[in-house]
Image 1: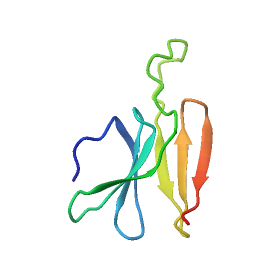
Image 2: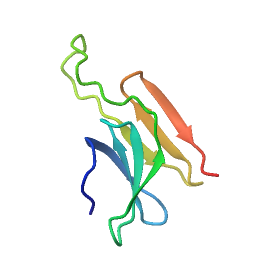
Image 3: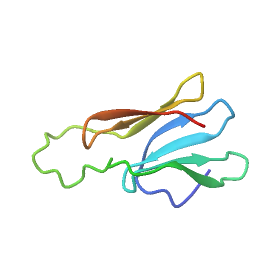
Amino acid sequence: MATGLSTPEGMAVQQDGSLLVAEAATGFITRIDPSNGAKATVASGFNMDIRGFSLLPFVNYTADVATLKKGNIVVSNPADGSVTTLIPS
């Protein structure tokens, strides 16, 4: 569907059929148009990449993204344990 994503982890389908991807290495939330693979950055500035944290136990920490009925986007951030809700304008 799309190439050039940086450590894609969590994914969610929006009501319009587009795909949201949490890119852990860049901290971007990227929207992908399924009809042509076009990418657009929805949000950035998330510190989702936990590689290099040597004191963490060996478990799978995943950056994730979800969509809610009203179009809000929820992002989990494993680097600091936060959950952020993005409200589209």
